[in-house]
Amino acid sequence: MRRDEDAQPPVPLPAPGTTEFVKREPRQLGRPQSGDSEETRQRILHGARKCFATYGYAATSNRLIADETGLTAPAVYHHFGRKRDLMTAVYETTFTENYELMQAAIGKATSLVEKLQSILDVVHQSLAEDPAQATFMFVARDEARRHQELAELADDHLFAALFAQIFDQAVSDGELLPEEAVHLRGALQAMTFGLARLGNDTSVAAHKIATEGCKQLIAASLHTSTNPS
Image (cartoon, rainbow, N blue to C red; front, side, top):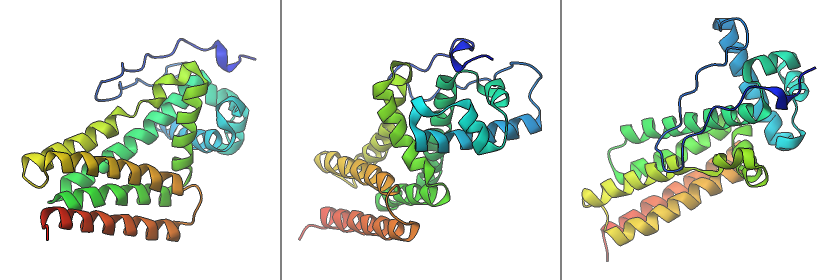
């Protein structure tokens, strides 16, 4: 039986500093992909995310993922090959889904307060729909420090660029002074990562309360900033 390490060489990840992930073509390890094949692929991604979040990278195997998804270990290998490539695919899928949701939410907002609050709403909604998301993202970053083949997963430049874009625009529009933008950007990063980690340890209802509290702090802070007494 072929082991995870016997698969094709990995598709290179983008170099640090780039603004988007490389679009990966589906692996062709046999018959062409069909609609059923894509559905199976998504099933594996979601099952693998739960397994990686629960057992970590080293302990997760194709057999565990097969048991979680109701498929076979060869089916998991057929779609993703090496475990490293599956971990990367799960990370990119989870990361990109949340990034695109944030972009869409920000695009509908008309003020800085609404933009920042919408980001926190996306974090809460994502965790409410799939609590394994938060656990997986933190596990992935931890594992990236332990395993050289996962090192690129520690790079979250897309979110950093998105936050910078929001605050640069706010300064350009006169909503914030440059020094205020620096402080609020740091606060937003702390809130988003804090709420994401909190999703591992609390109920959806409690997480919603924490999210609403952070949103109120943002509104109060910006109101005080733009309307000094």
